[in-house]
Image (cartoon, rainbow, N blue to C red):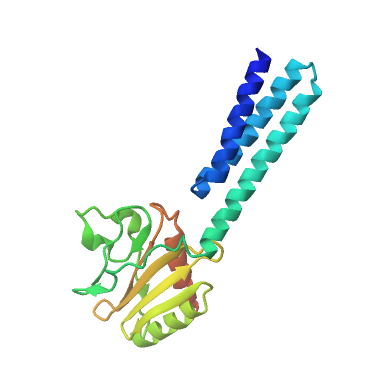
Length: 224
């Protein structure tokens, strides 16, 4: 019985190797390598019982640990490579900017913040999650906007894509995986504030990253 199981495992391992070579996707190859490692552990366990070699069980456990760590390392390397190649940056939104004195509505997912969120109550926007205070205009709105540009330019991963006296469009990019968040800043003379909207391109949850960034900007502006 153990011999038949061992032969079945060998056949399965051969099929896994074939899939690792054929692919066609990276996911197929990684999954096949992981499957081959798992079947190797099972084969060593069967051999231990078949030939009465309990020391093979220790070998199987060691190989299982190596296989697990190896697969994690490969996945991490692939993820990092994908980020560095720009595959995780997402597409630049085509509908950013100002419409009728308003920035684009906040997202329907918990991955954005907007100081104009309350203007979109009753829509599918996640108003409660996105709500954030606008940036204070200070004594001189134009001077505050100029200082805001300077603060943003000094931030790692920040790139000002569009700059007007009353509007800024900024892309914030993470260092390793190069995820991109799009942020708009709109001068509001009537309210004497600078409205802000920031949203992550990828993922349905930003885990508070956009809020933390805007609050960090607020603190730097206050110190200025």
